[in-house]
Image (cartoon, rainbow, N blue to C red):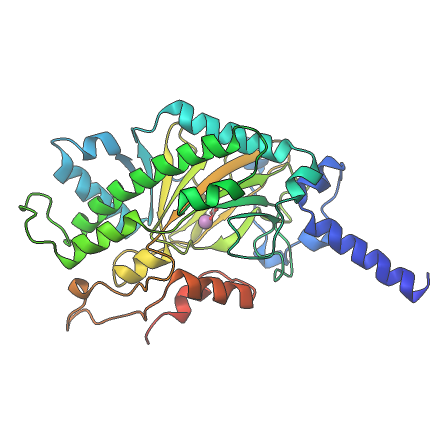
Length: 374
Ligand code: OGA
Ligand code: NI
């Protein structure tokens, strides 16, 4: 082969990977290309039981009943919530009040999007991190040395009237269904933040709300906060023990509300081990992001998580990430800093996070580490 030919081949191969794993899967590959093969120490150790789809002793995450939180048992539920935030960084939210058709429609329309012809999906490919809609693959496809086995559709959700006209026009009901879903999860997020502020001792729902405190102001700011929805697609993978759907990472915002279909795959780091989170139908997996770790001055930690893939089933998940307004700085809440508990983090905002991740290969909790005061 002439040198020019060799370069051509490499380029074609590279663009094939840039086009995503759904496309690879549709082209019927039987082995994982080396682009996706992780160094041995970073590979998941998939047990024989997992391979045979035998139910595992998976981690039972704390379960928070949203309806109960709004009722006479609020104080008790707040206790469980505080415990979940402090000791797990993750919980499952049940009885969340979002209609089941809103949830199933979101999964359905997300699935349909990835079933569109590749050319249709490819219209939304963009390297602009701030584009209102962005279709792509891997974790950070311009930086990752090893690619992961995931394609995604990212939708910026705020301000909705501005971004909606940019969202995919096909499947036909995508905009409508995804917008409804975005509004409902936003509402849930606001209610959860109020409860979490209470667990941090920052607001007291029983106090007469005559004087707006600084914390009430922050809660109000969330109403205009940033929201990003990520529809993740993990096609079946011929050799799931060589790669990951998503590498270990933490989420950047205050909270992520994750909807997973019935196929397991999400693992979180718990007591230095990777444990699988059982999907519970009609629930959300909620986790603490970096911004809440910073805001709580380290009381609540954002926890590393990753995604396993499997050889049998396609898996779809929808993550909704919420934070304060895009340019708003986040620092430790003054009420959570004192002499015995000194300030542990520098200020940050979403814009600086984007700058950080576009400038290097994202690894684990590196961004948060860069915000720590030593
Ligand atoms: C994410 C994420 C997990 C999943 O989108 O940040 O961690 O199960 N997703 O898809
Ligand atoms: Ni995540």
